Structure formats: C-alpha cells, structure tokens
Length: 295
Image (cartoon, rainbow, N blue to C red; front, side, top):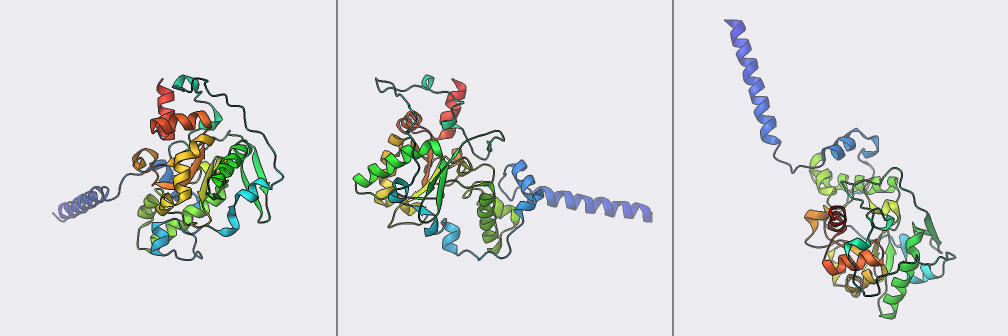
C-alpha cells in the first residue's frame, strides 16, 4: 500500500513538472534554435560584467556614434587609396530584368540570421588611412562610396561614415553589450537574446563582417535611431543611394522579412544594377535573392 502511494506521488510530481514545462514553453517567441544553442555553449558569449549599464534611451536606440570611428568625405578623398570602379554596364534601354543578374555574384551575397558568412568567403579589405586611424571596407566598394559622398556634398548634404568593416570579435562585443543591458533591466538571458537579435545582428551573420555594409550619419545628427530618417542626409540617402550601388538594408515595414528592426542609417552595397532593381520594385535583399533563386 505504501509503495503504491509513493508511486502515485511520483507520478503526480512528474505530471506537474510536464504541465509546467509545456505551459511555459509558449511564453517566449520562438527563435533560431541553432543560434541560441551555440550562444549558450560558446565561451565568447559570456556576459561582460564590467561594461557600463546602458540607459533606457540607449536600449531603445543604438546610442551615440564614437567620434573617433567616424569618417568624412575629406577623410575618404584625401586617403592614399586609389582604385577604379568595377565596370558594370547597365542595359542601354534602362530596363533591368532578373535575367540580368547572377545569384552567385559577390555583390548580392545574402548574409542574415539564416545565412551566415560562408567559411570560404574571400574579399580584400581596402584601408583608408586618416588622421583618426584607418577605415576599412571591401576595397571594391570604395570608388562608389567616394562618388556618393561627393554627390551628396554637391547637394549640400554631409555624409559621415561610421561602423564600416567590423570583425567577428567586435560583433560579439556589441551583441554581448546589448544582452547585458537588457538583463540589467530584469530580462532573462533568453528574453535578452531574443530582443537583442532584433537590433544587433548575431555574430557570424553580420554584413559588416564582409565589408559591404556601412552605417551612415551626418555631422549634425550622429545618433543611430529612427530620427535619422528626418535629416537631410537620411532623406538624400533614401532617394539617391541606389544610384551609387547602395540600398537601405533594413527598411520600415519589412521587419518580418529582414528579421531586423528599421535602420534608416544602415546601407549595403549591392552594385548599381541590383540597387536600381530593388529600389524600383521595393524589394529587400532577401526578396530579391528569393526571386533570383526561383526564376
């Protein structure tokens, strides 16, 4: 009789545990299991204990730009780097269809949470030496970047480059910093990871790591937040960046497709033809690549 009661108690406890686990499994939105598993197992993702606590405003936005890591047109144009733009002949009739593009073209490589940087991906960093230090990005995009910054200046707009190439370690640092800030706001690690991944790209899946992405601000507004869209620089870039091969990478209203919150300051080089096609058809890089793969 006593054994039967003990068994019943054990079964009841087991049922309670199962009910608790199942009911709580729906509290959080589902995230990529491989990413979260890797994050838990990687020593790189230990929370940084000596990092200053971010404010509520810094949690909402991306914070102020470090002036020591910003580069103006004068910095870029006075550098000793010289290169010519890759010859990209656009159709003479001005009409560009999907058949024009090669899905394997380096300019349109898709990097996101589902497509991490390929282990065999190769590129050459172009280094622009300035009085502040060195700015780095894929050397093939520098000529168009120079042209775009010069064209903006001629229209009375000042563009300032920040966060060009970032290596894997830097991306880990930024990701960890945001996680820690959210955990200081009483979030669990899982909650903090989920929210952080919507604002800071998961290390290994950032376009900054392949030198094709740039954060762009202006001399009078250097906060990485949605307010940048209302500046002259933000408006100019939204209207003209495609003419120089750059796209607004994370547009408003497409968050469910890109997996990243709206970032009016984040631009990605894809080449003039692809940028024009995506601009005219209101496509993200994810949608564009999907169309290419299905043609």
